[in-house]
Image (tube, rainbow, N blue to C red):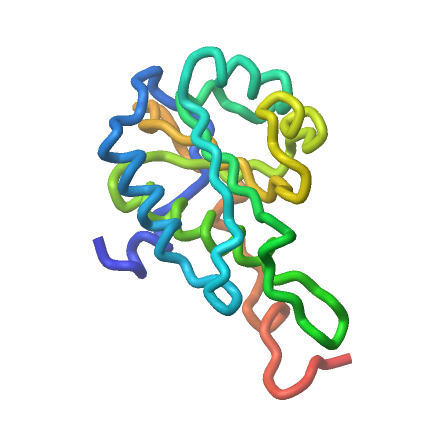
Length: 174
């Protein structure tokens, strides 16, 4: 599938078949994330694959937005391995983790795996439930699975603000 088509057709899947993801699909999705660019190529991302029944049950205690997906990828960043902007101390690692998650999400769609990027989770509960070490912070929860036959985008998915409201050239207009 060509990239423009993937970008245009991808939507947040919130209804999945019970079938677990194949190991080949998990590997392909992880490899896409592994190839993502990061600040100075420090690669501060840490990805937790959540795909056992017991792990999925733990996940359900940390978010109501699990959509009964059979697999989830918790994309985190190691703030101790981040490139740091010298002017203000900003870390690139949360952005790096988001880029990694985006690569994974697009690859998932390309191979027929549905995905929903979830931000609605309790980071304290998820860190405790999955023994996430200090300095490693969750950024995105990608719940994934094969889309149910009746899965479809939510109504507002295709509504976009006019591009003139979000893109500016040379300076922001007041």
